[in-house]
Image 1 (cartoon, rainbow, N blue to C red):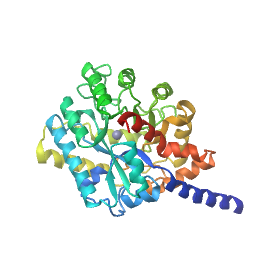
Image 2: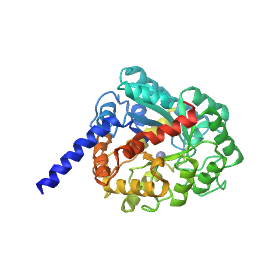
Image 3: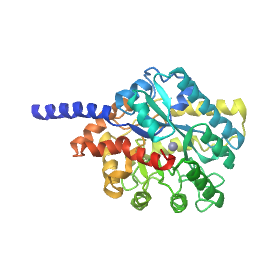
Image 4: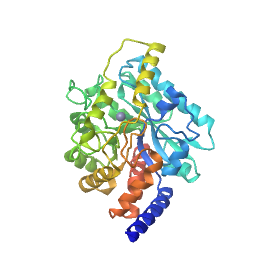
Length: 376
Ligand SMILES: [Zn+2]
């Protein structure tokens, strides 16, 4: 018994060391909602939420992708306005803490910023409705430093079907294919989390670059539409892309599925509001989502099972972390916030993962795709 406790302590010590050595990419956190809606300064440690700069360092996750999620009831120009509001909140954070966090637009940026001891901020758009069906808007996002876009959120947009909606386009429309080509040309990562299976395969048929599945898990272990099938994993592997494993309720343990459905339902309600009234409506949603922690049965052993399965089917070079922290209400027991990541590393060490494999999962795989897509 004593020997076992000693072993566990050694694993935790080694895991904490390894957390400082990995690049620490998480391909999806929703923390910018906290900055825009709650006005929280991520420079200090909070007792609420899942992510802030001190906790990113504690967890070793020094290079998260900050997602700009815009609820799908923001339509047309209103969705563009909301994306710009989120970009402005990001700029406020960057300007408030130039010694702690810096914008990254390439893999070389990420490596340099992390080496300097700062947090690297890689910016992504969550939901293709934010380009208002206009490639010129997409190009302006690129100029604002945004380097990835999730093609849909929870509902279909005018050019792509989502996994949690009734299909109307049979995948990507011709304009949707143009969006993918333009993202390839600009050097933006195409993110196929949230999209329908047909949209996923249509995107892979069009793209000339590796794609990411920024925050999804395994349908073989939890059969929800937001997760991917083994066939999709094999296609992702052939494409050279990477999947970030989602920690959210229902993604990792099917017994938490109801909680996932109610989170999706929050966003289904349509509204004809605009301007401040619409922002107030969205703020109420964000407060609902960020309210009391939803109790889940999922544990970090479940998360490790998803990583094992993804590695078995797609290969060690195609798996990463995409926690969805601050976008989910019930992260797994043992992984309640980003500061707990070394505990997951310890579980994986115990399961026999080599340190070089963990470095791939905790950053190098995503870094490879960023380098291929952005060119540096
Ligand atoms: Zn999402």
